[in-house]
Amino acid sequence: MSNNVSLGALLKNGIFGENPVFRLALSLCPAVAVTSGVKNGFLMGVAVLFVMTMTNVTVSILRNFINPKVRIPSYVFITATWVTVIDQVMSAYQRAVYKEMGLYIMLIVAFAIILSRAEMFASRNTLLPSFVDGVGMGLGFLLSLMLLGVFREFLGKGSFWGTQILPAKPLLIMIMPTGGFFAMGLMMGWLNWIDRKFFGGAGASSGGH
Amino acid sequence: MKDILKITLPLVAIFIVAGIIMSVTYQHTHPVRFQAEKKEKEEALKEMAPDATDPIKPAGTWSADNKSYEYYQATASGISVAYIAETAGKGYSSFIKMLVSLSPDMKIRDVKILDMNETPGLGDQVLEKSFLDQFKGKSLSQIILTKTETKENIQAVSGATYSSRGVTNGVKDAVQLLVDKYGAGIKTAVQGVEK
Amino acid sequence: MWQHVLTIFIASALINNFVFSRYLGLCIFFGVTKRMETAIGMSFTFTAVMLVEAVLNWLIYNYVMIPYNLGFLKIVIFIGTVAAFVQAADTMMKKVAPALYYKLGIYLALIVTNCIILAVPLLNADENYSLFESMALALGSGLGFSMALVIMASIREKLELADVPRSFQGLPISFVLTGLIALAFLGFSGMITL
Image 1 (cartoon, rainbow over the protein chains, first blue to last red):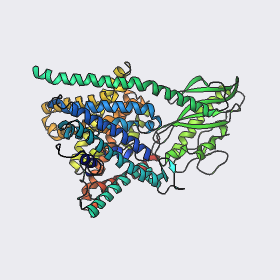
Image 2 (image 1 turned 30 degrees about the vertical axis):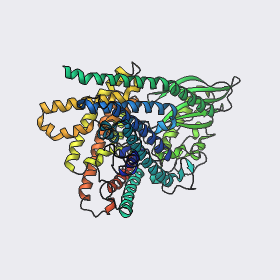
Image 3 (image 1 turned 90 degrees about the vertical axis):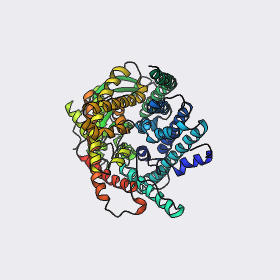
Image 4 (image 1 turned 60 degrees about the horizontal axis):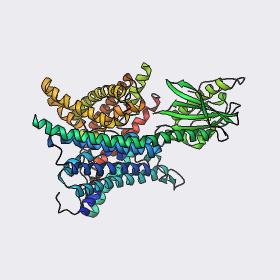
């Protein structure tokens, strides 16, 4: 991608075209693990958005400074630094949520999506596009997590963001571990179907790391 | 040699800057986290004995399953109003950490779950009031888990038998401890939880 | 004490299975289970690396990080040791056992940024496990992961012949399948209580 791509298009690409979860099928673990409620999905998304943007920006600034031979360890190290920062902040200010998903916050460091954006985009682009790409990808991730969260929390607990909407729990299984996999599979399948039916797309890629 | 320097120096520079960023964050968040933890604990204890007017102080430590827990005595103008103990029980997939408070006549006042990691949708039903409220007013000999409806004992949440057992065992250990420490004269009839 | 170690081992393999109840390692899980042979190769490599990493990081955590109050650096340090160990193993295997390298070398590269390798030392640090408990967690998790890979690979080999709706081909149907296996794994609840 070069500079003739507008920033708006970059943002859109992250959210729709190359949505990290549903399109690239990257970093699936947290997408299933923390989406039993909307709030958890949202906070996880915010953490990823932060790490994603900061890593992209840092890599972009340092792109002429880092020797290509050691670039991967450098990117991992940069990511780990920002993950440590968000981990510290969350554990201090969002304690209740952190107790539930602290492990997954720490594991953001191993997200394929972050490393791959650093390698494929930020290391070849200037500051502004890298920043926008990070925000776009992060938002794409955040929205996917929230979509899954809304779906699962509504069906599993009959509530939204902890507020009870339905008098009963329509489909308890949705917030159980198995439900995460079902929700993810169904959502991917539906999005593929919508994409093919109404937008003439080819559907998501059928896997990868 | 020159190449190695060329590769290493920028790396070292990155390490140093990153180290500084992380340390600064740690220094800023550590006191906040420490305070939050302390406040959480104080609030939880306060909730267990709302009528205590003096600050609740640890009275000693006890251990179960190789882990050490604290117990407390809550007083109002010098008179004991409640005994509180930290405790834990093995649930299905985690240790369920709890606080249990007893009134001076050795009946359970309240049970509060502090920390657990049970299966969402199944095991976490033990958090519900309808289960925990069963403990209120029960004495040591009544803390028996059953699967049928009961007024005398504790009824397990269906679908969460293991988590219910974890909670019940933890509560029983704590009550036993507090009765041993403070309940002189009150009978210590202990029966195992129904397997 | 040994009973506790055994409990951790079995619990981490079955009840808290990394794939089915902790949702970790999904990328690898869906990536390599298209063929049985890759799944088995991956299982061996992962279990071995997890065990070594658990021991290595336990030593570092308990003898360096705790005494110097550096717990907050654990993410950076753990991922550093993983990367360093994988690099070293890669180089050594190439020299010492080329045949083995030819078979398993490609998986090593995938390990560096993988969440389950990193999850083991992080869990050990969180739970303050002893050395043997850490090893039990690593072995159990490795075994559980291997089991998940082999089960999924054998199902997916059959799935090739199944008539799946077009929108659900590939990943979506694999997710639904994983959900079903996870449901079956809930049945281990009666076996042991952690």
